[in-house]
Amino acid sequence: MKKRALLFKLSGFIVCIVLALGLSSCKAKREHAGEPDAVLMSYLPKALGSYEGDGGYYHVIKTVETLESKGKYTALLRGEVKDLTQTRHYTDHRFEIEWVVDSEKITQKTSGNRLNDSIFKEIVVLKTPIEIGNKWTHNVVDADNKKIKVTGEIMSIDEETHAIVVKHSTPSGYFEERTIVKEQGVTSFIRLVAFKNESSLTGYHIVENSSSKPEENLDLEERIVIPSHLFALILGFNMAWENYVNEADDGIFDFIISDSEAQNKITAVDHTQIIAVDFISFYPYEMDYDHSGVKIYVIESYKSDSDELIQTKVVYHVVE
Image (cartoon, rainbow, N blue to C red; front, side):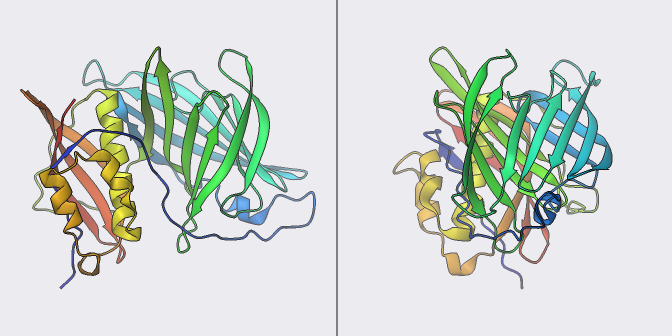
């Protein structure tokens, strides 16, 4: 009988986001100087995809075009942002994402002001050598045409899938983080949003494609829109939970009230009795306020190490 990962009803408040996936390195093999790097090219997206985020955000990649020129290889992604916040009808906003690979780096260029992606018009999303701790610094231009120095760093590399987590940060404290997967490109993106004395996370993650069918006995609900800071909280918890299950990383406790029932349940987890999982996506379908905070009802999707799709309903109790 297959063992399944345990998911809990939790009480939590976000303290910080820890997305270190505790993974090991994969060193790139360089091609001849001047030619596009073969390992970097393997991370270019090759298929269409759908992505969802906080506040009803949703975008789709509708076309992928590849172009070759001397010393460079380009993937041009065209898509639309869908606005679910006001009505059940979509309002379309077109965008383009250009990934250009040369002998040492992947440069991302974006156009389309509704795309919830980098605040920088052009940024080096990945650079060789492909190894944990590799850093690079360069000047970028933001949406207001201000020049900013940004530092990219490879935070982790999955030794099996070679998925790479890359974090970019500026001296002001702003950061954005991507998970980059072979043949899929960016599957998860988060960035810091700050206004006055308040800050939160926003971003998106890939929605599982149609080849992974939900369990027939799961009563799927109609999704709703929740506040962006609550969406970011649940997204951060799921990433931390994945890391806790797979690597026994204790960053999960930054999301949980001390001495709570949720903490007791998590500390009681026997890592020898649960399987490794990969977080895919979640969506909320109900939200209720009470005297102590808010309860958010979500459906979460994980994939086991045997490639089995696991879906479950979970209730988060957030104390604000």
